[in-house]
Amino acid sequence: MPASPYFTAATFKFLRDLANNNNREWFADNKERFEEKLREPALTFIRDFESNLHKVSPHFRADARKSGGSMFRIYRDVRFSKDKSPYKTHTGIQFRHELGKDAHCPGFYLHLQPGELFAGVGIWRPDTATTNQIRGALLADPERWKRATSGRFSRTFELAGEQLKRAPRGIDPEHPLVDDLKRKDFIGVGRLTEKSVTSPDFIKQFATLCRVGGPMIGFLCDALDVPF
Image (cartoon, rainbow, N blue to C red; front, side):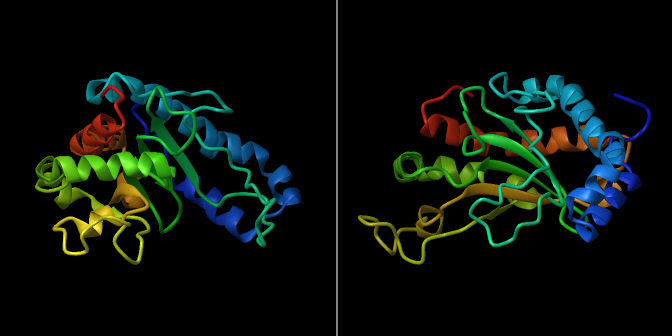
């Protein structure tokens, strides 16, 4: 771990400036800032976090490649969006399961955006088959789910994401876990501050968050019959 922080005030200054100048010309003029203040610190964080991650589970990957790895690309997919802004105004890092092919798999997540910083655990927007497997696991072992998402977890993370308006077909609307059974996302979100993210020991703080989220991730992995 370096003596200095991975992310600094300059990281967030770049993101704020990008939000105010979201165009290709400005980005080209500031590409060096992007590399120096955002991408390289993020890739270094990913590399250094690998040993911490494997203490939580050996089945999750810290991939520090510039493209196709744990760090999401800065470029937005604007093909089907009315907003044609070419760049994301945040950076996202996902330490995903070794069997995951995309972002919709079990993972530990870090989101860095001025005014919107958080750690995430779980599965974001799984497909229908995966969602049904998770709901089946909730029905089969509700007590384990409650243990995984209570106590220290509930003091650290908030269950978040989108939900169905009504109970899924075949689910009793009065079921004690109906709110969780209605979820489209099975994620916990833990809020961060710029002060904590820019501190020299942030990598240890994030490792602690991942450990706290471990039982929930373990539940989801078992629901999908993948190792944890």
